[in-house]
Length: 137
Image 1: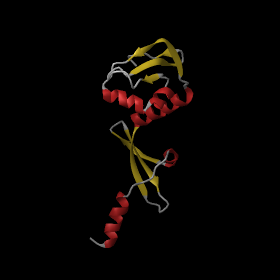
Image 2: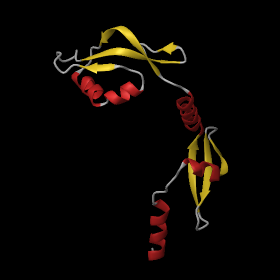
Image 3: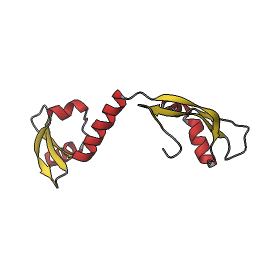
Image 4: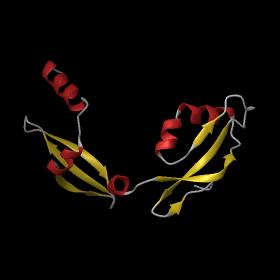
């Protein structure tokens, strides 16, 4: 193989940057297996990159992003804290990500002096559109 052929192979397998904007620029080439869209995205050099887009995953992603934009999560304080029985690894995970739990409506409290398995309790649960999430959620 020549150096030119080797360069073309390298270029063909180089990572491609892709943004949401690219979806509107993509040309639909066809559909595969009733669930995937084959799309072409033209580059400035007039060549095209082909993409296989999972229709179901794309729809779920769009719905999830829309739900995040339109939903507001509040906290419902509990009358008394709900002690959680967790493994030490789960307790550490919660401690490391307390801010994520709080942003999502869970009022988690970590007590470093409590015995293992009993270090975490919940003082509030998330609510959204008048629905309060519970232990099963």
